[in-house]
Length: 458
Image 1 (cartoon, rainbow, N blue to C red):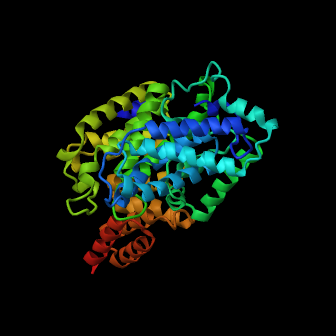
Image 2 (image 1 turned 60 degrees about the vertical axis):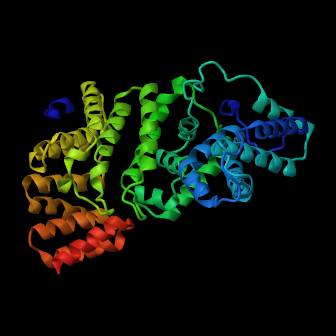
Image 3 (image 1 turned 45 degrees about the vertical axis):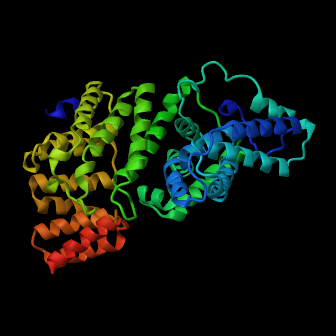
């Protein structure tokens, strides 16, 4: 259809910094509880004397973000939680080869990390009775009425909402949350923001300092406070999905665990706050994810959209995504995520590359650019214009970006420019642009694709 018509644990409730002193009785009570949990927890399921490092590596990649989220919720601070988590993984590396793999490794790591944190607090605490108020804050009354702990049963989602505090700038919220909660590296976050890793590192350091100095509480927002944080939360989920859908570096084109986690979070948000842009982001992720089976060849090579076997697309995701797009558009209160989802839906509905409605895609990109001006949106629109009106028309738009000094360090801009030069028969300029894209690319499949193009040019 033509969519252009429609385009008109109690700690979060308390201001607690666990680095400060806790009373001796409270520390020992928490320590005893942790010891009991470890003693009564799941028995080891794997035989001892096995190579445990692959299990730990896989567990760290898949679960470290959620483990850290739980620990921050339990312990009340980023630094202590991070240290405790790494101590727990190190303990697993030492103990699991002898004792065997736990039946529930994630629960073992959380319990061990909690105990490690208690031990660390004990070592640096003066056990001053005047600190009773801290224990009362940590172990006192139940959360106040209106809190959404029960509505947010997922620790990672709780912590994302907690980190996306309105006192922090949105880009700072996103950088902090992606690093500390979602486990992305500073380099990966920097590439998402088209900036440098030191810049991102400084944002995170300043954010932590502001949280500490201004005593911004690690507190799950009330239901009434969710709307003012949802834009920042959606940005985090969107960027997490992007890194999973198109990995910024490394041997694989995609990182399925990240995109799957982003979709999981998107579904939770959809149940919690079915607002138009929440619906639109869920649709966008599902429609993009539907193409995953066709985006990489059997030998791990990049497959362009026009060359993909569309019969392998996930049509259940496509049906669900299109239904969500129509639902969001029908509200007439949609935003940029919904417009991007509408573009993805046009691609998904085309049974062949030739059937793609590029006129509609160009108009949707124009609407998106008016709503959310950015160089990347301009680049995507230029590519769509090249498909609809010809490579010369698209090249004019890309050259305008470069003339303004935009996207000069973005490998996809150089790659798109090279492709248009190639289609126009301007081989020398195409070769130079491909070489520049190759120099900037960090993903191995993308690098091999660019090298293949260079080889074809001779």
